[in-house]
Length: 149
Image 1 (cartoon, one colour):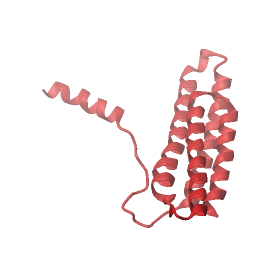
Image 2: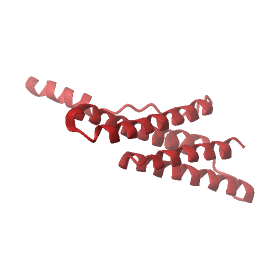
Image 3: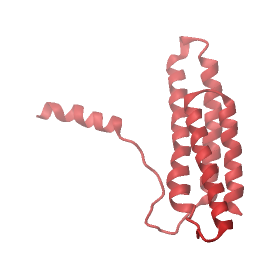
């Protein structure tokens, strides 16, 4: 029994994920500007990772470093998706009064932008095409503008 404990403990630690989403109590403590800054920093890191992956892919001499950049790109794209879903979609974009057409239109516009952000974050994980990261960057600014009106 004891011989199974250590491998099980190591497997659990290896597979554990870090969840750092803001609470859903609601606590009333929000840092929208910090979330936007975090997303933009993630996108910048994704772009750097894409560039490094393309550069390192020409030779297998740095396969470990290449792997680290791929993992890093994945982590930052996942973080964008987490902030979009757990912070903005779940907590910050409120359901509108469906009898108010302007509120419904604003809500739909915000949700559509957030969905596009999720899709382009996914595309960033799938490729090293900088156009996907650039589009994610544009969408983030478009959402911020729509959100802060």
